[in-house]
Image (cartoon, rainbow, N blue to C red; front, top):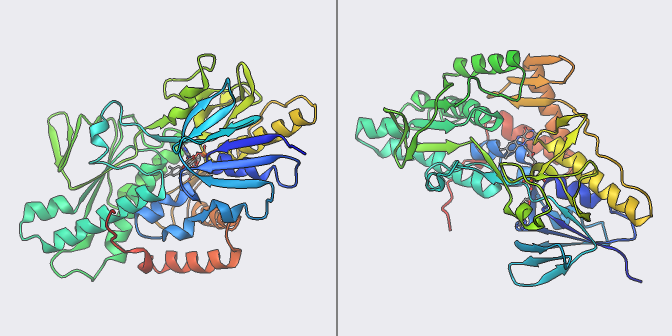
Length: 416
Ligand SMILES: Cc1cc2nc3c(=O)[nH]c(=O)nc-3n(C[C@H](O)[C@H](O)[C@H](O)COP(=O)(O)OP(=O)(O)OC[C@H]3O[C@@H](n4cnc5c(N)ncnc54)[C@H](O)[C@@H]3O)c2cc1C
């Protein structure tokens, strides 16, 4: 007997949580991702700053879905989608036919028309990105230790982060902590505590998606850590050894990009009837399907989803909830029922600032900052990580790495 074929593109939060809904259902599910693992993106900055190892925050998709006998996992790049013929085309040329498609391909960085900046200032979306940032970050201290020229040494010990959203703030908060604590006493020619961290934000304040009082709290915490926070600061060029803000030139060997997102190009391939926003995200219908193609659903960071008149934020909960909702709607259609509109439940927003400090917005004006927010953050992340790893091993490994300042993750690996 032939069961309806569901194709899921992307094994991030949206795709993985959609796939899990099809367990023990009469469907044939294929999940395709260009990488073989699911990444817990909210902890990528911990890998980038050598606090956690990649395997602490990622797990093979094949393993995560091993108990789902109706689900196959393919590691491949999807290059094209033909909505009329209902097929997706892989990089090998193989065509994957589907009856229902869930597109959960997420987003990459946007350099606002300056693609040439990417090689100089890498962004953080994947394990590969995190390892590249980790390599540059740790190598900067090694180069500074070797250098006999003071200005060169200073350039190696200056770290610029462009973009004051959650990713930029979390990176900026962690770098001084590593420089002052983890690396302390290991170098002979430099004082790692003198490393400068500069956070540049074009808008009037950091963390624009958080409430003003929480953003102000986070800014104070960053300044206490020694971070030079500069708002209303538009970067005009990024050069191999410097960042320019108009006439000002900040000499720095390590520049990191946390400033913008562009949706996966796959959204554009759904055809002329499918509306996109300026970032290339697909504007979906209330049930998460796209106009003229009720069999195609778009979820997570690639979708513009609206519930209760508000656009759902591009966060993990938005992807998880929309992934699940799209799968449930497909199952409804298969059973001859009407799909339901997606409703997003805001479970709050969190950001950490270094060790032991965080801000939390639980909605309805409930704001928490400082140590209690950090402990809540830790609890929540262990809980979620445990969803795809052994709870005890996560607790032991992560707790050890975190409180011992991640000795094991401080390896400099070369790009192949
Ligand atoms: C550094 C960082 C920190 C974050 N911190 C937080 C946080 O603290 N809290 C929070 O709630 N959210 C946070 N987020 C946001 C959250 O992680 C995202 O909203 C969420 O991951 C989006 O899920 P998604 O499934 O839409 O996309 P993704 O998780 O990006 O997954 C997309 C998947 O699609 C695959 N893919 C893409 N194109 C193709 C293709 N052509 N062929 C095959 N596979 C493809 C990719 O390999 C990837 O696995 C953070 C994001 C980042 C990058």
